[in-house]
Image 1 (cartoon, rainbow, N blue to C red):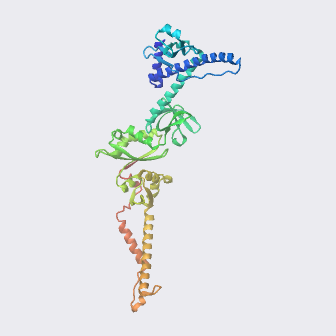
Image 2: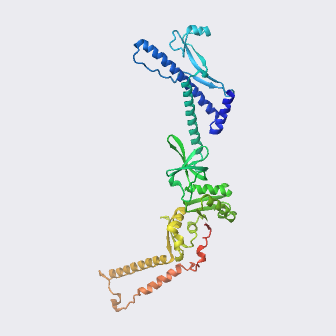
Image 3: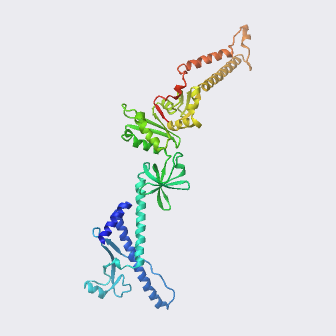
Length: 455
């Protein structure tokens, strides 16, 4: 029987993942609690009889369990034999036979024992009553539950930020309950992807966000919309990322729609984008399949922020990027027919590019930018004319401007606004002479140099 007991503990250790020593300590604690329960019952019976004698059958009092009574239990790790030990005190008059021993009884054991000495008595656990056995069972279950909670918390606290494979169990209100092995995880509504179908017993991979507490039990909170999920999936599919040769610099994601990933290579002989895409797109396609068709753009990270912003707006072709370092904002100029492509549906492409680069991005078409330049030049022209007239009026000592061609009978010819506009347009053409304006319809779909768009 003892051999079967040890084998049962080993099986429980394997199933629950709790160390055998922890299980044995729990059972030892249960034996002590069971003996105390047995001792309490006997003490109550004895106290009741004594009070009946003293009070003539009046109100009864309850005895209390003493936790520091010195009772211990031991289980042999090899044979499984159980022993419970009760300390006994040598007294002149015995009042509690469970913890006290008369001097005569003590001398029968050893003539050297005196009043006040203590010795230990071994108790056979098989003699415990039904209530004591129930107490032992309750304590064992409680200890096992506590040990399992601690194991789950310690195990998954170290896995926060990683992946976990799980099986969908059921949908509870807005949450999805997932079995991830030795624990049950919760997928909240705000961490779900609209492309996912959480059907019963479906296998999926999840991102472990944190370990929380619910009803005094550890709960693993998981996600299918976190950008970290895309990062971990690429780390599994691309060996170069795991080896540290290729690095994922930043990720911008709108779960269930599109994700942009910026990558760079620490080895000049390895193309970071090509490594992530894989031969014929097999690597990135594996990630897309896991995300149920979510579109992924893999682009090359560039330390030149202007080039990086241009790549981030892929598949649109960028003509010019004007940076404002203080405001950390950028004005991006694109051809008129590229404006809608650069902004994207409902502004998604521009929004993801801003998240990816961590810069504010203002996108303008070529014609809009030309209008802004002309308005700026005209404003400067008006200010210059007003300043010139004010200077001339001050030189003449007058409060209002005078007609300059009447001074000293010397005619002065003032240039017309049309001539200034011609000068402005010539200056704008000179500033934009490096811009390639001949973009055909097919080149609209070309990728920004250094970026790849995967549909």
